[in-house]
Length: 176
Image (cartoon, rainbow, N blue to C red; front, side):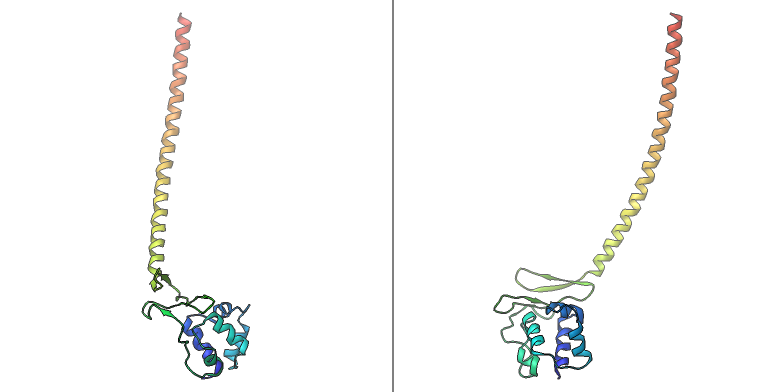
């Protein structure tokens, strides 16, 4: 396996694309990683060191030369493949967490295990709830509008009654 293939494998294992992987290892853009993969180049030592620094579970020797094991023996994997992966990190207490796929979220429990949950059904439920709330708002606006018309009509009736009372009082005052 060539160096570019090893980098491509890491990107796939981490569930990242070239942009997010480049950002994760501290590169400003994806040009370096794209050129390595697309042009089948060998990565520089500096690039490999950045990868191992960001993802300490991978061995530098394996990444540079394809020698030895891919994963470090002290990678400290917590959890299992059915629930996702979280890695305890290196001696600097760096933590490497693989990103979940689109439409899922990764929940990390206090014991360090990670569970991947599908969020698309939650999003659909939220959209349905928003639709129901919008319908309820429209219904309540119609009711309020109807009450406002009733209030206006009653205000007109009250004003005409007040005018009639004024006229009758005026008439009674003249008789006295």
